[in-house]
Amino acid sequence: MRMTTLWIKHPKACFTANQANADNGIVVADGHIVEQVPHGQQPNTAITHHWDASQHVVLPGLINAHHHFYQTLTRAYPAALNKPLFPWLTSLYPLWAKLTSDWHAQATELALVELLLSGCTTAADHHYVFPQQLHHAIDQQADIALRLGMRVTLTRGSMSLSQEDGGLPPKQVVQTEQTILDDSERLIRRWHQQDSQQLVEIALAPCSPFSVTTELMSTTAELARHYDVGLHTHLAETEDENAFCLQRFGLRPVDYLDSVGWLQPRTWLAHGIHFTNDEIRRLGQTHTGICHCPSSNMLLASGICSVNDLLQAGCPVGLGVDGSASNDHSNLMQEVRQALLIQRLRYPADRFGHIEALTLATRGSAQLLNRSDIGELAVGKKADLALFKLDEPRFSGSHDPLAALVLSGAHRADAVMVHGQWKVLDGEWLGGNLTELMQSHQRAAQQLINSSPH
Image (cartoon, rainbow, N blue to C red; front, side, top):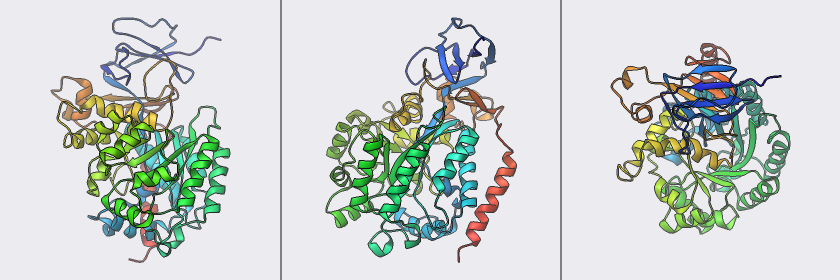
């Protein structure tokens, strides 16, 4: 039987994230890229179907390396507005403690679809809130991702230190260490790389140094090593965190991570702002990854990640939207522009441009997730694609299509493919009714707010 092949041909521009020439498009078959077609050439592969991309800029599917899906229910929440990280968290923890399975399902689906519409094909979620009524949040996320056909790295978050133990979260959202470890192992066995398209992976993710014990950090690293899965946490987001670690552990955050076995290539850290030069050197030597979250860092006034310094030291660096209560959107294409703009406050204009920003959201984030099969347009990679049109007034008069995509503020993909299957066409989500999803999600958000005393 003849193999079905699709030539996505004659793109307006093509960003491969690897400097390869695919100016005349790519060929997709069986969920993978099977050929790059250079400028002026025709495919060598026998083609069964064509897709005209002459009005499109073609990118690898964008990869979101840090998110909190459940927070889509608490965007622009009045009690959390205009606060730095620690007061912001303490104002929201009591509300998040009310999360139910139904509300969490609505939050997860809305976040994934919102990401998909922005050109994102892979998302890493950090779920660490497990009130008594929400035991199986990660299973729920995996089921929804498989139904949508979207690639995810679901990190089993954890909090074991409540306010009574010197941490930040209230007691109703923390768990015992044995419960956390048992469920972490169960989730790895149940979901990690178990589906045929490799849509779902699991990683382990204590929330932060100020919400778990030293013992849990060490034991989690051992469990991740045993199963060869990723490690993730928040680190060096604010100076308050540095002060907390010094007070509690007598160590700065990087020294603390080193003491619990976390400085290693399978680890990626969200934010990574407040490092010394020596700490950046040590992170680079161990190839510990950093996920840059520019919008969240700006909204909470946390600071600016030193992306170029980290890259030069040897750290993989990717991009994340962070939680939808500290952004407050789940749009990865918009985050690419934010990354460009905020890095211009750190470095000269000729040291960080649109190509560097796009690289963070593609190959960079793939490196954080230890995935060599996504993040680039190359033979053998998964056929995960994002295609954008430049047909809005904001793009009129632009000359370089790739630069225009970032500088002029693209925010919604015209077509998105995951594993060779179209998920978005003509700017519309193909997997369901977006209006109905938004209505049910808004009801869930209102019910959550109403469940908590004001």
